[in-house]
Image (cartoon, rainbow, N blue to C red; front, top):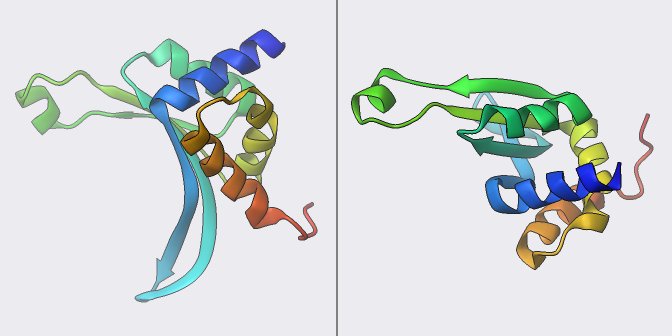
Amino acid sequence: MSEVLAYLAGIFEGEGTAGLAKIRKHHQYRYISPRIRVSMTDKEAVAVFHERFHGSMYLQHSPSMVRHGYKPVWSWCAQHLQALEVAQTLLPFMRIPRKKKQMESIVTHYAGRRVR
């Protein structure tokens, strides 16, 4: 199991991003949404995130991408408490300071809060 988590941490460090997104409603910021996203052209690698953590997996493919010769991009996204679970699970396996700090921001966001 730890081999799979180390693999996922490595993919995240190369192809992922994490942070706190401000969500707007009616031109005002209403709340903060922790998010983790991995995007790449390799569907199988993205599917491993989906199998392990669930979340959303989707294809980004537009006519302009086809016209310019780009490959379709697969993305996986976890939000809110799912993002917290991913961050807590992958942090021990992460090595790149900037990416580690992104994950830590999600854990810090929930620190001191009662989580269901």
